Image (cartoon, rainbow, N blue to C red; front, top):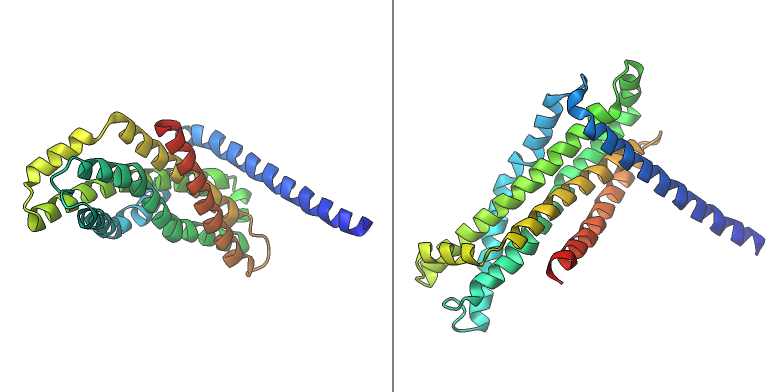
Length: 261
């Protein structure tokens, strides 16, 4: 009985230590972020490469997904309600589903599965290859050189991709309604923007920034947490993806409750 109690106590203590270490990691990241542009170790190349990989190379996938999702919303809505296309309800549903929720949520999930996993794997391999120790030996902070450029790059990319998702979602749905249901393109766009409110833009923007922040923080943390075993890299990458997705869902719920309840 005593041995079981000790095992449980050790597990709780380990979880608590990991939480405190992660909290300290966040604080150090924020401090380095505030001082980032004042330091001489700023590496614009790393930042631009992160934006290129996370943002630019995802434009095609985001555009196709936005058009398909928006089109499916219209087609399914029209199959349920005969007058759906001519009703103002079409714009309310599009803004509620695409702009408020799916544009940021799907974008974040794409970034986690693609860029987040790549960040965790890359940093994990750098730790094993002693590249992080080499940076420390020559006086370069891993936070300044590795973490902060990736954090800024991912935040910028998620925000821009979310806006890009909304643009293609509205354009795709407008073209679809014009081609299939003979609804004027200009009329659809004007009515959609009339339905869009400042709260919708604010909530979507806040979600995108928070999603980008937590994705980069969690993935960098797990990547740098790799120690000496090569098998830790895929394990840490898997944990980074799972923890990022779980945190994204929680933040999405909290922000939605804050703005719309």
